[in-house]
Image 1 (spheres, chains in turn cyan, orange):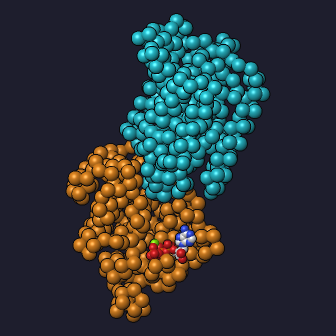
Image 2 (image 1 turned 135 degrees about the vertical axis):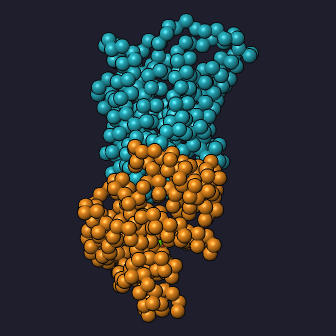
Image 3 (image 1 turned 180 degrees about the vertical axis):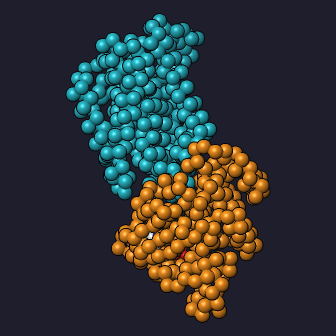
Amino acid sequence: MFAELLQYLLSGLTIGAIYALAGLGFSIIYNASHVINFAQGEFIMIGGMASATLTASGVPLPLAIMIGCGGAMLVGVLVAKFAVERARNASTVTLIIITIGASIFLRGIAELVWGKDFKRLDAFSGETPIQILGASMQPQSLWVVGTAGVLIVAIGLFFARTLTGKAILATSHNRLAAQLVGIDVKRVVLASFALSAALGAIGGAVVAPITFSYTEMGIMLGLKGFTAAVLGGLGHGPGAVAGGLIVGIAEALGAGYISSAYKDAVAFVIILAVLLFMPNGLFGKRGTERV
Amino acid sequence: MLLEIEGLNSHYGRIHALKSASLTVREGELVALVGANGAGKTTLLRTLSGVHPASSGRITFDGCDITRMKASRRVAEGVVQVPEGRQLFGPQSVEDNLRLGAYRRGSGKPDDDIDRLYEMFPVLKVKRDQPAGTLSGGQQQIVALGRALMAKPRLLLLDEPSMGLAPLLVAEIFDAVQRLKREGTTILLVEQNAHAALAIADRGYVIETGEIVLSDSGAALLSNERVRQAYLGL
Ligand SMILES: Nc1ncnc2c1ncn2[C@@H]1O[C@H](COP(=O)(O)OP(=O)(O)OP(=O)(O)O)[C@@H](O)[C@H]1O
Ligand SMILES: [Mg+2]
């Protein structure tokens, strides 16, 4: 009984950590630019695909992850520059459609480059399960949770302690004032896309040994990340992290106790409930209006 | 001449908000720009700071044409604005607001400058860790002024710093402006409170529906019949 529950919690925590990173990506971009970036899942896909295919062709894993991360950051900056920046004065809905378009485009390119089949990436430190109180955990899950934890803390410190982080926050609070203290707000938007892309790509690389990599892996992960961000209150970083963990655990419990057929439905029930009953999420104060 | 504006035009869509405005500010001067509601004062400052585009005309700062320069670079050049309505980074602490004021000054020691500001405005020190948005209107105006000073302005643009403040606080703000001038800061002061502004200004300009209609020394404008009727209610 207890072992079973623990098992579900552990697998929920693992996938929830990835949702948390994706949700954080949504929030960072939303804060800096008020854009809801539905290409976030594609950053995860790029990280997963690049690390799987590069290691398969002999590149050492850390280098492969770094290349994937750098590639995703570049793609993020290009999306910001050529898709989003040009539509600066467009409505929220138009911007969402633009990012969805960008994500479809990126999947198409990925398919041309990498093909349609599943790519395998070896677990980073073997596959001997670790036994915890009757539940078992793949060592890769520790990599996922640990990496996400370190990234989340690093991001927290970046925004709380560094002048650059504070400048990004300042831009989200008051764009005019940010310009008047000399912050280049266009660069802030680009930086936020690069940062979110890096988070997504690293998440994609560490989760790849568990989920496999394929060009459509970003669709669901992106939507779950969006659910996490909305649940936590769009634009609220710690909220997105909590939201990610909640969605991951709820999903694992739903799959375990009800049916794994409903796994994805759980996230959509959550997002509908949030949008209907508490549109500002658990921690957010503001509405989702673009200001 | 530190600042020279020649034939500046600016629009909001089809609204012609600034009509061929010309104005100069010399090093060390305190120049007042007065005018009624909606005359175009804020538009002039926004165009000067580069957060609103000029349609035509020229802005020269310290000999350089800055008409098309990016807003962020103008701050680095020393054109720094305290905007209308303060525009603080509300959820961030007072001290973070001040540090962000020094954003463009990569080098140097912002800490020393913050200490100096705390000395000049003790209230800032008391409130340093509070979210700026929770302060009273007068305190917020001081934060906004302090944030601008952190950028080491060579030309300080003040947009209605006394707006919405109790008379005692208005006096305090004007004292601070005069002190800055004495210490050598060049200031362009925009005010609806024409009397107080012209009284401390070396020179003044009067703007009406986007056009600069009068310019003279502060004292001369104060005794000008047209100004007295239109802006001083005398
Ligand atoms: N964002 C805007 N969009 C459209 N029109 C604007 C905008 N801002 C100002 N205007 C118009 O431009 C003109 C000049 O406005 P501006 O704000 O510069 O006046 P002001 O002198 O600063 O007035 P106040 O004393 O009320 O601050 C006004 O007619 C105003 O309605
Ligand atoms: Mg104004």
